[in-house]
Image (cartoon, rainbow, N blue to C red; front, side, top):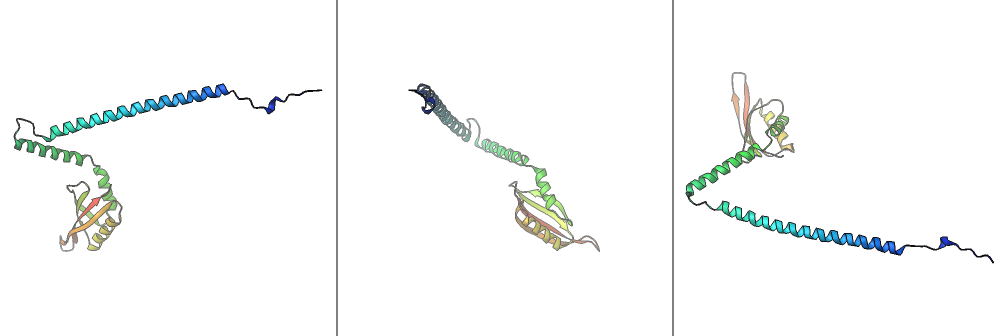
Length: 178
């Protein structure tokens, strides 16, 4: 009688190796979870500490320091507001806004004055044109442009500069969308 053993039909797994790998993976994940929990709790503690420091500093800034009169304190606050407004105006890109106006202004329109409003997005345009038709086309161009909103014709009147030279002087207000 001849006995044959077929070793390929039986699956052999090293259960000890699989258990070690699973245990090592679980231990690593538990260590990472503990580390992240500690990191999050320390960040939350730091955040609450910073919030309390900010509140303390803001309360100090809101109150008038001793030895300074109320008039001097209010004058200093108004100076600070004034300079902060200047800084905000200087931080905007003037060349980009001027380029928007230049690209939107058609032939036949001469802008003589561009004045920013108190809000940096508000502008007033003063200019001249040969006819009111050109001014109307300019208004329509500004209104259809995606860069301008709240376009209003503030004033317009006829100009007579000589016997043959006539035109329209106009004033427009608008908001520039960045």
